[in-house]
Image 1 (spheres, rainbow, N blue to C red):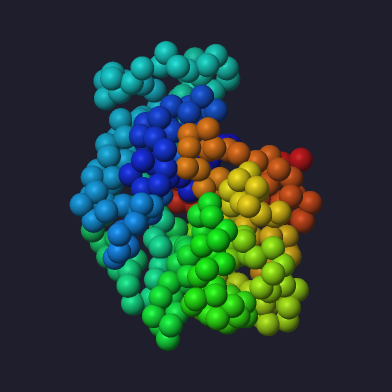
Image 2: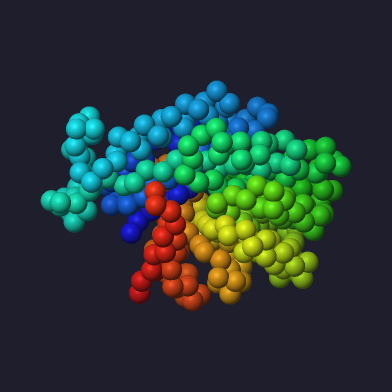
Length: 308
């Protein structure tokens, strides 16, 4: 069963129209494809949905969800061209060639600046929410530390300006923000939990520091209590910005011990990225002792064996 719940389209910082991703998912034999564009943030940017485009995005995905629903192409799907479908078991007679389409959002949580997660659930017919932290707020310094993006200099500049170069203070603020997000907003999925390590490269902190381990343990305790699913995100690896998955193996060992459910995602920004390094991620999880991952369908969460 092939699936991905973390997908960005041209509505936020992805490359293409949603239906292009669906066509690629069909080519690859996906069973479930979830869309999760970034929700609006209250400042000018190039990565998130605008307030006016948020309902347009949701309506677009819901329309595609309806278009591709059903056991077989039928009257409701007459406009769907199957010319691009490859021959193979997923498209043989009697089988549905379409993945189940789900509507989600990735909510960029910034304390005191972004809307409550409940407001998105109330306003839109969402299947799920991904809660993530990309911008760390330092209320005392009066600014935001951007930990993501293609430019490491922005990471460095932010940690210097917002936290005077103090890695412990910066990373503590990051994990405290994730903890607040979990406690106050209860996202369905926790996005790239330890992404703060991406551009660190051993310069500002060590993941073996006792204080770092304590922050991780506190965060995992809250996740376990909340019932959220942790995504195992492959993007840092295939973009060559990280040496490990998000989260890394030491955190994954703790997740396994706590029996926290995981789901593999590619955090795709291009259609061709939908399943990048999935087999490598499955292999890594099996090596650590995981027997299964979880997938969301229209009927709820489902446990899927990782296989041999």
